Length: 189
Image (cartoon, rainbow, N blue to C red; front, side, top):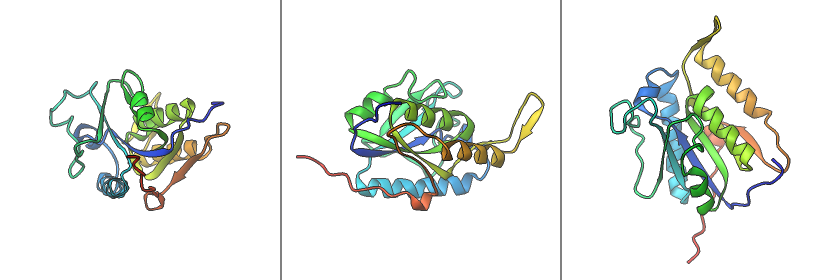
């Protein structure tokens, strides 16, 4: 990308932390706990929060569609309902981020190798600065063309991908959840 988006705010983007997704993922309790902590810190600073939920695989309001406990959106937080791995495709995510003056995304959630990687990669290609929280995303084991990978191997590969992501004039980082800092959002009256 030759242009960086000029938004001044950071947003926390939480992807697919749904019952139907998490039942197949590794380390669910640790990941949920880390995301819950990120959420508290984001809310304490007024950082915009975006909840992304898959509706291709899960009927809205069904048990598999619902977010895992204790993760719960608050009034005023953004809800993005998607039918593709990419949370930007066919949703109002980009328009909402622009209207909120967001230029950096802190991304966490599930699944590392599908929606998280696709959405974070697309955000980078669109000009957003992106921070992937290396210990706050998860997935399950997978087999493709006779090759099997554990969830931990897929998470490590996803982290390796984002550790070397590079576009001109943009900032990318791969950090542990405790290293994520949110600056207080200044409200203009």
